[in-house]
Image 1 (tube, rainbow, N blue to C red):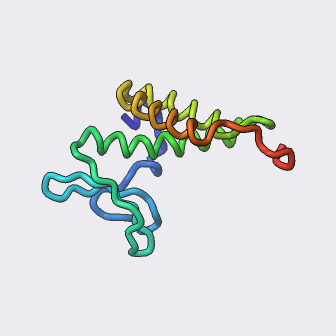
Image 2: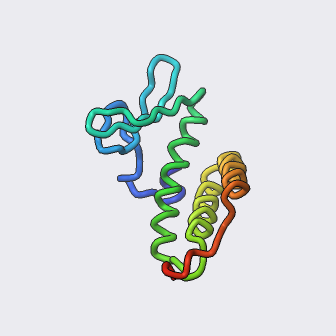
Length: 126
């Protein structure tokens, strides 16, 4: 999946051994799959996935977000809500990996935009 979108290797999670810098780490404990974020020995977040497919969604949600953030920063347009370009790019990348993953992301984005729609940035940012 990472090869399909040409994901940078440093965006991929570690397995079983956290870096300790907030980078995601995949952990499998028995029949449970986790994506864990740990920094300086403190666990900040642990996402439980019911199966390998859901774990892969979590992993690639993170990776595509980072890649889309890089893209948006390089292609920022004055007067446009930066989330627009970022979320469109993330959805495009996720669609290359898996249509069901893209649909799940599309639903989440719709829910976010319902609560916090796109806005023009304040003039001092333009």
